[in-house]
Image 1 (cartoon, rainbow, N blue to C red):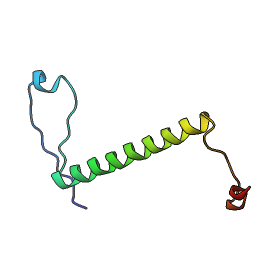
Image 2 (image 1 turned 90 degrees about the vertical axis):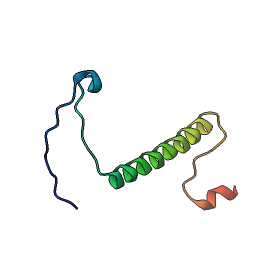
Image 3 (image 1 turned 180 degrees about the vertical axis):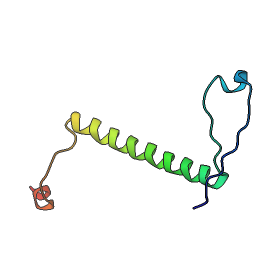
Image 4 (image 1 turned 60 degrees about the horizontal axis):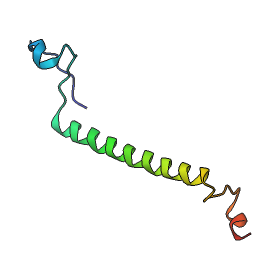
Length: 69
C-alpha cells in the first residue's frame, strides 16, 4: 500500500458546496466502485428473498433432508 501524501488545495465553496473532499487514486476508485456494485447486487438479492419469504413462497429448513418432505 502506498504511503499517504497530504497536500492542501483551496477550492471555491461554490464548487464544493462547503463539503470536505478527498482525492483517491483512479485504480482504487474503480475497485471501490466495483465493491459498491457487488454490495448493491447482494442487497437486491436479499431484499428479493425477504419479500418472497414474507409472501410465503419460501420456507425455512434446518437441513437439506427436510426439503424432500
